[in-house]
Image 1 (cartoon, helix red, strand yellow):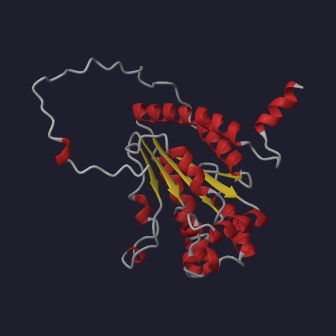
Image 2: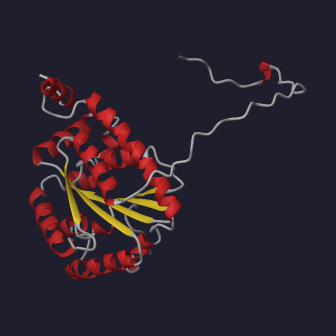
Image 3: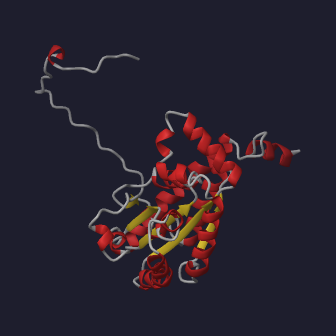
Length: 272
């Protein structure tokens, strides 16, 4: 009976992680992420976390839950726009190198240099020669990153055809989410198989022992986020070096201060 009650709390009637259980677990994991960030800063570690996957797979939501409790001065999310005319003439990896972390930093890429093996390949935004050069160069590029002392984690967020279509339709209908549905998303609507083939080919060349790919099953968004954060915490051994709670001293009162008349201040109206 106890196990049944725990299962009822953990999953909802649809078999998905329940909101109550999810929020409880997420809070615990985010506290561990804060501890991890303190450790990264103290030890001068450099961490890169890459998130790739199909459109609407849940990359952005996962990244938000990882980063929202962290100090933004030590955790940066990089989501680059399409390359400028100048950047298109540079070495392909050049604009990504400038975003790599310094000591004590965590950098999260919301899509990365793998654009070339994914959307650029499928949508015809690169030549065959550029694509083949990427497959040759990328493993060597990542080996250089790892040899330099950077910890590189790569996550592929997987979603089924049915779930992706459900999320696309929700974005199309919901004004608050419509911005998430880009022209590229719409253009790739009927290219499921092409993206599958591109992903398989990409993994064949870039799933290397120095920087392996980790696949996150994400039809259940909440479960995917919890699993991914748990895995990140397991991949970076850390100790709790969080500072002790701060005790604030009594506030000093200045009796000579006279506040300006309230009538001279422009207040925001109390609409609520």
